[in-house]
Image 1 (tube, rainbow over the protein chains, first blue to last red):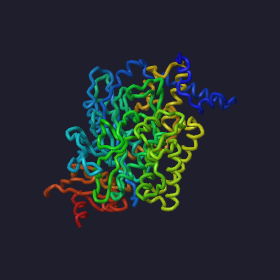
Image 2: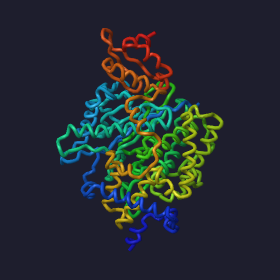
Image 3: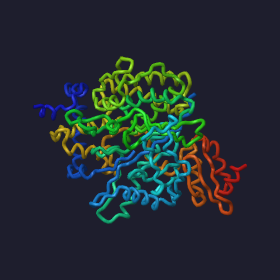
Image 4: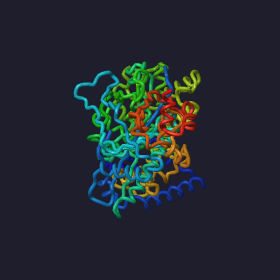
Length: 64
Length: 499
């Protein structure tokens, strides 16, 4: 029931809604968005290719 | 009475041998460190071993060891080296661990913590030359594998022995619970039993899930908010070393700076009884977790008095007292001029956290990571329990420069790498680490072993000579710098010290 909503807004936080509610409708906003897009492109490139296998393989012994 | 804070940070890193099915973390950690020691034997790692003479991690601050508690083991047989910058590099609990040299302020901790990262990076490169083709070792600066296994980043602060331990417990607990709002490295989900991704999709810290007690001696199970290990590595009549195990390993230098800088100030406030208000949480262990789970930072917590308070209000109160303290008593005991920068950044960060935490995406780890994850989720339209987010969480802390996601987020650095490269080689000048490091640089062949509070020399005909260093703020450049310019040999130095 809550699944779709949870996907979109899993951790309701006022501050973030504020950001979403008042998008910076200016060049600066566009610039920020394009920077973030570039960053996400880059991250898609370097992110572990098989996320599930990688996460499974990352097992550590408990330490202090 | 407050004493000048001598501070050190010890980080256990995650480690992964990639390209093979076999995985023995102790062997992998040993290989990593040995690769560095072999590559740098003529430089920062002259093959001088650690001296275990004075280790007694089972001693308890409360003056007794409670029945059934498990004193930490000392692993004396594994690789364990002292470096020319005064740091210790060793295998601990199946992890590579680097302890910074003793520092006097938060900025130097940031510097030597960055130097430790560079040492780990250099170690990975050296290990690649030793490993079969297709295999490589990767080091992660985080505190959990996402499967319930945690490893620590511990802070150590020298405090006045005369300060009642119960007073430290009261006030430090309130600080440790609430400082998480700026010290957290962020984590997707929760590793506490029975908590789902719906309940906690993302939290402020890596470590909060793993604390089960208020006060205790353990570090590997039933971890306490206040650790009572009583092993000062200094004159035990005068000093305590408060061993802090609640913190996250931070990628962000601003987070490290604030974590250490604010804690040093709070400890001085405690020593000088400068805190008029006590914030005794009704349920500290629960509050520790709930602060980490509450991304709105608005949740009030019940105090033993019946009143309630938010984490940010506790921090505002500590900051206010800290400012007053520095105005009235100066900065001598809280890191000198660096304390002014701590107060300034502390205030800036609390102001922004209150207004809109997302403003701190280029300052604090948890905000940087949270924003990255939110953008990633938006682009790929995925839920919080998607494996890609778990992978992204781990890779945020990957120390390989090309793979490290943190590196791509434009987070502010406090120290330059050029300075940190020098700090891989040379010790701080204003603690006994200076004496240790400078001796190791000059006369590694004459040093049999070293540890925090002594060094053992072998200069030939005589029996081995142990030089005690029970005062962490002696052995500085100011005290002994001229000895290093005037002495040609370790034998000369020992003779001068003997007179």
